[in-house]
Structures are given as structure tokens and as C-alpha cells.
Image (cartoon, rainbow, N blue to C red; front, side, top):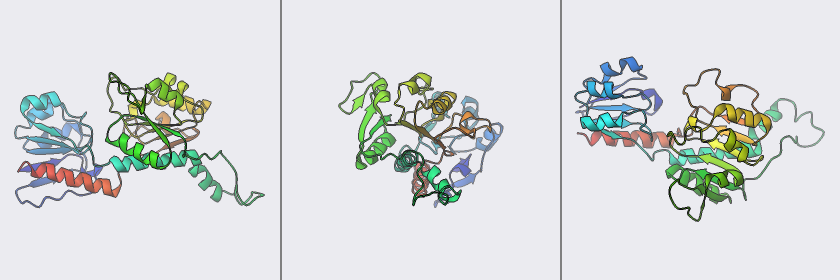
Length: 304
């Protein structure tokens, strides 16, 4: 059985197949123009972000399974796959705890201004202080805050569990078209009340740009927003403007609308106050990587 991983460098943990019937080829990355040649004879294709459209899928006449090394499957033409009898499988729950911990870690960093205070200890501000400590930006506890979660999936629930453990009051955004549960609020109300807003919804036409100028204007001035979902959920220029104008207190962004981002991306510009950007690593704890590798190996071995 021929197994091809098109962008294996996106998973630092190496896949290992014990069965000698598996002929495994791992490519660090694959340009779109090279996809057809690399998957033409494959029985299983593993991909993280490389797109498999109708043309690529039809060219792979031996293909039985597309295993997506991620929770989302938006890079696969699923209608064509279904027509051709190709199964598409993702790995939905390998990194829920890792992403949830990243949410809480960045929340602490924002509310306690960890980066600013760590810099002050080294750049002379502390040694020049007249007192035993150096007082800069306002430090706020997380306990007692209202933690707003948009998206009631595995990751949203995991983040909510950690937030409750820290003494935070948790509310979810109401799911459109469904009755409002006791721990849910309509999104507009959640925006107005949340001290922390964390995003965990898939990218769809309805969610694209859901946090834009109007949404940010509804939020409290001392609120922070965290996005570990999809970059395009947030209107980047609107977020930059809101931070410069002090409409919200801070933002932690782990995902951008284009990845890798261009050098002139608005969220990578210097001087944006209270903005913490990380390079799409919320999922990437060693534990999560090991779980993802194991689940991918299991998906492939089921095809034997």
C-alpha cells in the first residue's frame, strides 16, 4: 500500500509504520503543481494544508483515503472525493488540550503584561526604579472575569473547563438557529459582557470576518480577544485600529488569514499596542504531536 505525506514538515514527529506492506514516502512540502505526480499511484494521501481539488483527486486512480493531519478538511474537495469513493478522514481531537492551554497562557500574558514586565527587568527600567519593583501597565487577575467562548466544540469546551478551574465565569455564544442554553448568550450580548473572548469556530461564509469593526466596538474597553481558530475570523485591519484606539485592552492571535503571512501583514507591523502574535503553534505541544502521529498511523493501518 503506497502512502504519501505531502507536507510532512508540518508535523515534526515522524510517522512510523510497522507493517512492511506500507510503502511510505514523506515530502517536507509539496508545491501545488507537483501534487498530481506525487499522488498518482498512492493508495493513501496524508496532507495537512496542501489542497486536493477535483483535478488532483481524479488523477489519483488508486486513491482510497485522504487523511488530513488536522482537525479541518476545508482543503479537500469533498464532493469530488465522495463521487470517486475516496474516504476523507481528519483527526479532530489530538490537540484540544494543547490549544486550550495556549488560550489560558496567552490570557495570563495579556492580563499580566508578562512580555512588558520581563523586558523591564532587562532593559534598565527596573534597575532605575526608586522602589523595590517597577510598576508599569495595570495588572489584572483572571479570577472572577467573564470568559466568553465562541464555538462549542471540543476545544471550546476544553478552554471553558480550564477557565472555570481558574475561577472564571464561563458563557458560550448561542449557536445560530438553536435555543439559547443556560450558559449561553446571544453573540451581541456576549461581546458586550465578556472580559475575555476566545474563538473556536470553523471558517465558513457566515463566520468569515465575524470579529470586525462593529463587533470590536461592542466589546468592553478592558476586554481581550484570543483567536486560535482560523485567521480570517478576525478582520485584521479592524483589530489593529481597535488596539491603537484603545477600544479593547489586548489581543492574542495564533492564526492569520494567510499562512505563512506576507511580511507586510497588518498584524505583524511593529508598534501595535497590547498585541501578542504567535506563529500557529497553539496545537503544537509534544503531547499533541504524538497523539496526531498515532492517530494518523491508525487511520492508515485500517486501510490494510
